[in-house]
Length: 147
Figure 1 (cartoon, rainbow, N blue to C red):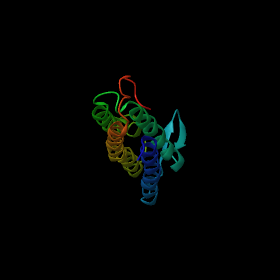
Figure 2 (figure 1 turned 180 degrees about the vertical axis):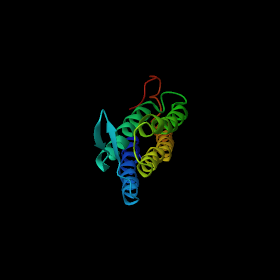
Figure 3 (figure 1 turned 135 degrees about the vertical axis):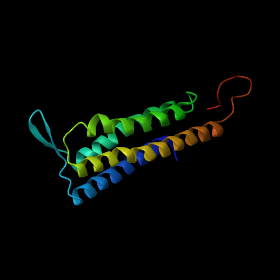
C-alpha cells in the first residue's frame, strides 16, 4: 500500500473506532458534558471523530514524508505517538469534570490511537523500504537516477 493510502486507512479506522467507543459510552450512561468557564459543554461524536482524525492524520503525514529519508523516524514516531496518546488523557480528559463513564470512554478513544498509530507507522516504514528497493538504479555513468 502506498504511503498516502496508509495514512488514509489509519485515519478512517480511527474515525470508525472512536465514535463507536463514544457510542458505547453513551449506551453505558455517559453524558459527555463538562463545564468550561461556567458554561456546560458536551462532547459529541463529530468532535470525537475530528479529535481523532486531525492529529493522527497530521502526525502520520509527517512520518510519511520523512520515512525513508530520516533514519529512525519510524522508531521515534512510534514512541512519540504512544506517549502523546497517553499524555493527552491527562491533559484533555482528566482535567474536565466529566462523569466516570464519559471519562473512561474518552480515555479509551485516546488509547485506541496507540495501536492504530503503531500499525500505520510500521506500514509506512515498510512502504518506504519497498519503494526504495523498487527504484531504478542510477543511469550508467551519470550518477543520476534513471527516472
